[in-house]
Image (cartoon, rainbow, N blue to C red; front, top):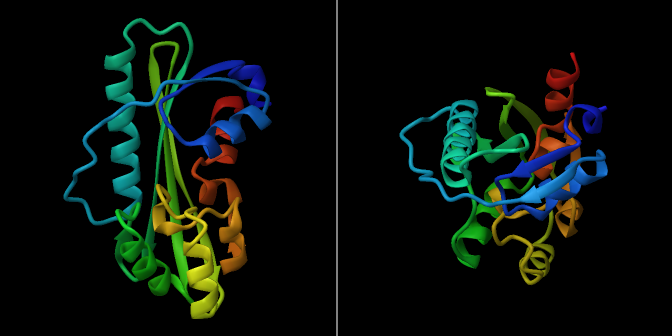
Length: 189
């Protein structure tokens, strides 16, 4: 179990969903968000999230100094038809993103980078999310919740955003923002 190998963890993320996933796995979480440059020139989703998770981890190590607990950094991005989608900066951008995702299948990539016992390990996992062909009224209703703010692809599967989804192929935790099953397998193997 994850709590056996990570009883306490520093999470370099502001994401309440990531924190909740870890706490539900029995891990005591200390939240210490980090701010790292997220600019890149990469085009493959897996490469982008892996780079950004590692960059966030390195920034967190630098910002936190001597670490008494393992440190985890993560990143999540949406890929659809070769295009990458991060967090929207406005409701107009959220509307465009959700319209683009409507009635289609997208890839959600989540990467993690963990500093533990002087070593860095990490990985990236993907889940495929099939969106319903929701109505314009359903879209506007969802946007009015504000849940889209700060969410890659403008939705949160663990909230009202689940009403936009027809099915998920893969680990739902990846869609929430943490490749939890992959991380647990890597740490307990």
